[in-house]
Image (cartoon, rainbow, N blue to C red):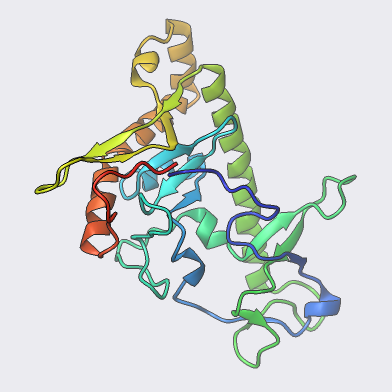
Length: 260
């Protein structure tokens, strides 16, 4: 149900090119109110900085496998996204969109493996970036990045910093051996077998309660404990996501479903 992306490029990205004066001096960014690339994605990576906001609106789980990452669940079934409609427009008016989605189609990438320098890149397949007559310019006449591009770069840098904090959080979770395979069973009225969802990981509350005093004190002082509880509290929302799937006509068609 919640596997980490496993492609040459990150989730959503169909290609990457560095923004540069030579190729993109006339490129502009058009505003858009839809995200069609989200329509068939049920989960996106999440950073720990987003846990407090996300836990009120979307379930937070961890992907299956040896190198799990936090995920925001927008649907319980592959290909189902309750956050957007068929055109990729937000269904809810709370305005919350995971940071990973807001960053797309931009990305900081290391073009030279021998250097630590990261370059601002974008997915060239998106329709909102190009040599248009309308939209906001990305590069000024003097070749410098415009205020818009600087804002995009700043957001991408902040996202990278948050991603590093997330990696440390996951390393600490693994060191404490707090993750376990998750399972959700939902009984729907007038059905026989319940719906069972697997293929994700969650924090083992029993192991959390059994942590030694020094371990508990450490994760409380470094803020990790609050993040763990944000994750645990968010799991109540999985049933709400299931209900939204049913309301939107995207519920599972069989009585027992056990996604991998």
